[in-house]
Length: 253
Image 1 (cartoon, helix red, strand yellow):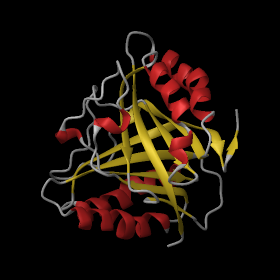
Image 2: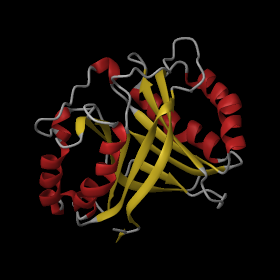
Image 3: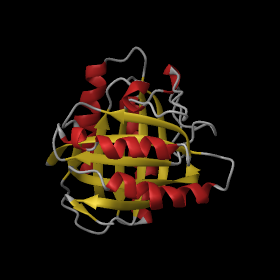
């Protein structure tokens, strides 16, 4: 497998619900995005706007949860990738501005991060354009080995998916134990009970809908049989929009 190791974090975002959802999604990709994109030392910053109707479609299997409750349904993901391990220090001013602005659009924010350079971006042979993209979150079973879980995500699962025909993008993250102090915005909820904790995520890009349909009809079923002793939940979302604001060290707005 050929991949690049990155220092990335993902912030799961839940929009306020006192106005139409799209109004807050527009604010996120507008004024709020400009605050984050102005941070120095970013290698990449992109927003993943998740579908509010196309989710919970991972094939059911025995004791693996796949249904996402309304309250825990993620609206979007802020993917932030730094140039190096000291880069966040240079962005403290923008982080404080982001903290102050979050109350304007989010009701809950949850940061997930792994050890530096634990995010993996796979270099795939398929160079076709990504037409469809999904994010899949995975919960580790309470009694499962952390080491075995991480090894499966980074090795067996990644080898299987990254080598499938028609896959145009594949990224993985395995998370450190979640703690609200990593992103403790004032006046915004960070409630995340232990039974809701997520332990890994994968992003999969497809060259067309036929490849995507085959993935869930065949590959996902095979994955269930392999991961059943490690995972208690697998939650899939369609990504409606992927919007880059910083890419390859270059600010786009």
